[in-house]
Image (cartoon, rainbow, N blue to C red; front, side):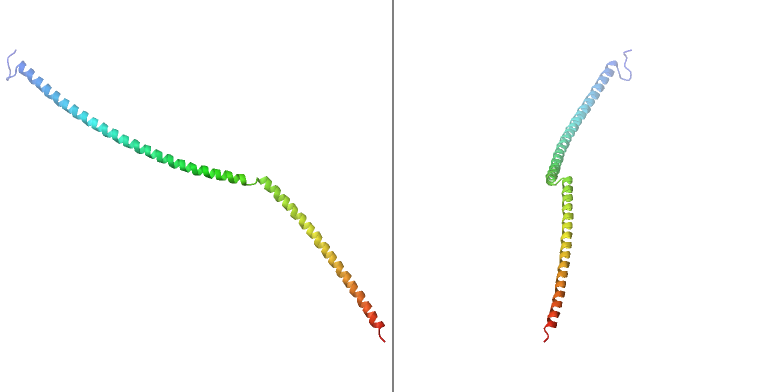
Length: 151
């Protein structure tokens, strides 16, 4: 059975398959190394792009924090302004009491002014009566003087 068929013996067939396996092994090894290099290159590029993205994200976060801090500073400043302003305002109850007091004083002044005006009007009227009466008496005396003086 060790007779060659078409020039193939077990030995030549074995050598052929071993060389075929070795050739294929070398091709697969080269492909593996090439793919490993590609994967390493891809990972390096991915790592670099990730690093760049993280740096950009950190920078964006810092800018956002700075903007937020500025906004909170202005809000706190406004809050302080409102607090200072509120401290200088009078309480509503106190203002209402003051207005009530002033309104009472205005009413008192109006009443006093009415009394003074009515007294002045009354005394003015009385003065007119006195003057009118005095004028009447003087006119009677003057008439009497004129009548008695005729020669």
